[in-house]
Image (cartoon, rainbow, N blue to C red):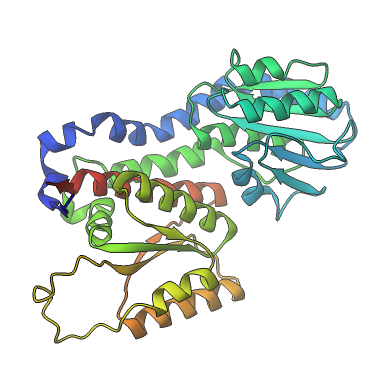
Length: 343
């Protein structure tokens, strides 16, 4: 099927109405963070009080498919060994001296339920953020288990609840739910469907994505995680290729692009091949290694005439910056899907 991008649809009320449910879900991201944080307050206080009566765990194991986000936040900070274990089991050494934390936004994943049941069987301390009456919650029932109630199905809101608990027990960095929610609200305002294309960063980014193969890069651990989530959302919205990875993995894609000739007639060649576009997610991290990787990517893009787009986040905390980058990219993906039409 032949497809093309109609940018007029991004400001057309009738076209936007067809994506109302998706865009409304994005706009309510900040509200979900506030709601989940408030709903979990009592359970969080109870879990923190219980943790203070116990010795510090030997290790923290983040189990389940959503464990990678916790790893991105906790690995540089956690004072005890930290392991992300996304499979449907636990490490063989996990036992009663260890803390198992689980994010399960919808509470229905069979593999996550299996991992939680195994943690309970081994006598681990278990803290699960999930819907209270879900399958995962049922498998978490045990003497050393705590459920942090989360019912929105939102991964980030669920993660903020868990990160708040881990900070309170001195196992993670401070995570201010209001700060994260405000970052999401700011993106929702700037990327609103009711905001004109000319001043809407997500709509402008969607136009840039439309005729290219996105190559998404984030320098810090959390920015790299956001890059993977944005690439996933682009693939879902468009059915097209979108890549995310380390600089060493993305450089060959950029370097393989033929140099752009300013004298080429873009309408003379009927080929549908899309050139790569480098999308940089910048959360302000300025480690020497990050600067070096960014420099190599930008130099390769300049040499090959590859377009570069940058999304910046300047919020105070790492998680808030991650939230801002991810939501901006997700809005752009939604507008990309809206603008693509075909025969």
